[in-house]
Amino acid sequence: MKKDMTAEEYLQRLLTSGARDDCPMRKTLELLSGKWRTHIIYELCKRPACRFGELKKAVPRITNTMLTATLRDLERLGIVHREQFNEVPPHVEYALTEKGKALLPVFFELAKWGEAYLEEP
Image: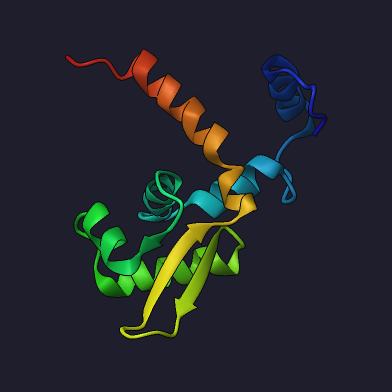
């Protein structure tokens, strides 16, 4: 996709080219799919680094097992970096990689959409 493509041009391209397995939007939606991925990425956007316990508090109702699995998936995808500190007591910190930080404008656009269209009843 060309970087200077407008939303209208993109829509026209979608309508004329049909479904493709290599579609960038499809790949992005798959990357962000799952109940917890976007919430964890959002929490990591708000701070430079975060410990497991801090993430657990920030993401209500997530289990330790699911948080661990989701963080591992995001690490495998290159979105999150895990750094282990071998000191007393040992601890681990998670942070967004440059690839993960590049999602910040996407979250910004989602927030703008939410403000515009998800008004209080």
